[in-house]
Length: 334
Picture 1 (cartoon, rainbow, N blue to C red):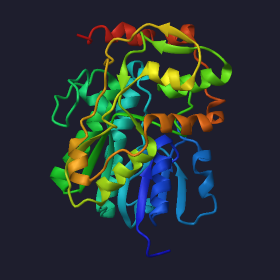
Picture 2 (picture 1 turned 180 degrees about the vertical axis):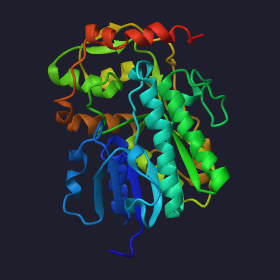
Picture 3 (picture 1 turned 60 degrees about the horizontal axis):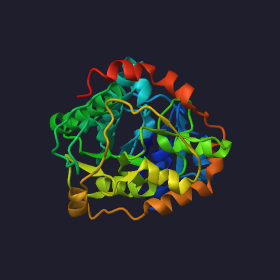
Picture 4 (picture 1 turned 60 degrees about the vertical axis):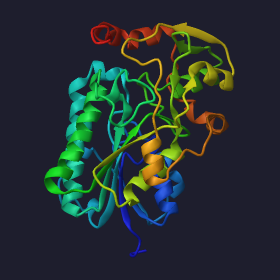
């Protein structure tokens, strides 16, 4: 056991982080997990109970200082922890900047003190704003709301630590991640969590706009493989887009899930299409998506009971939750 490489996964009880833990254990790593359980769930790691190679600590990333024993001997640090709900960032910008930007600095300093060989940052494609598609890594940066800004500042901090301190950093700009264990917390947000709870309740799907908007959905296990590739490559100081390069419409998702529809107003500041150009990661790391959209949705539906305790949204509660979004985002949407 002592010969196994150690990896730290922040946000490791969350949606993407827990799948990262699974992949690392499968590949022979000892994994130290940090999560404050604000969005993650201990149940996401229950299948690792009793495994001495998986150590869990419930804590806020901002509480960690350089030299913390959880980072001792860490070869890789995968940083997923943060606030992922987009819509509430309009109302709580200070919290988002504190957790997503300053919290990242705490993790960078812990990784630097530990002599980590690679720090892989979970960046967000929201940094591109309303981008031309397909979107390459050199597309203009235009974060339009506090969540996007906070994640981009975390990314910039990571590359600053690479430039100034020599910390070996890579980043993955995630497009639209989906899969089992996605968030069930109270904030209005990701379409899958909203729709799955509505399906369980026999309620209509609240489709934003006319449903023709397309998203570049990438399945979570494919995403975890991309992060591991970013850690194991000899390349450093790089950023890669990760999507499927094959956007799917919300109407196609509704078709696969099956059910009635009610429409809610299209939100300003949100793109009609997200579409990752994944040529760079395919060429440089040999990564490509393996799970089709249809297969991914099928896997989720097979575990739909996971979302039974998630909040049930309807047009009225959505209107209330997005009131501030409409108020402020009209000012930035061209």
